[in-house]
Length: 142
Picture 1 (tube, rainbow, N blue to C red):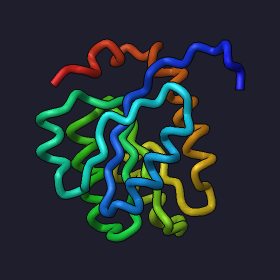
Picture 2: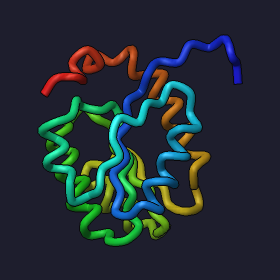
Picture 3: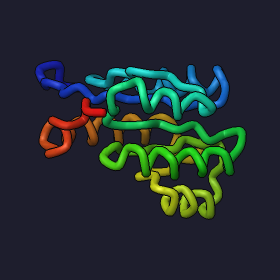
C-alpha cells in the first residue's frame, strides 16, 4: 500500500443478525483505509436506525442465517437509501441468491468464495469514487 495516498472517508453501516457475523464484518471493513464504521445494527433494528442516523455511503448486510429476511431487508434499504451502495455478504454461494439480491437492490453479492478480500477491494474502489459523487454532499441529509 502507498502510505502517501490520501484516503477519502467512506461511511459504512454493518447490518447483521448475530454477533459473530458483526465481528467478522467489522474486521473486514476495518482493514480498508478510510473506512469509518458508523453503525453496527441488528437486522431487526434497521427501521429505527434509518430515522436517527446520517445516511451512510455503504451498507454491508450479512445474510447468513435467514436469506428471506435479508432479501426483505435489502429491498427496504434500497428504497430508503437510494444513493447508498449495498453489499451483501453470505456463506451461501448459489448463483440464484446473487440474482435475487441484485433484483432486490444490492449492488454486489459476495458468497463464501469471494470472502473478505473482494469486499476490501470493493470498499477501496467505492472510497475512491465517493468524493467525486454528486450525492456525496447530500449524504448526511435525512
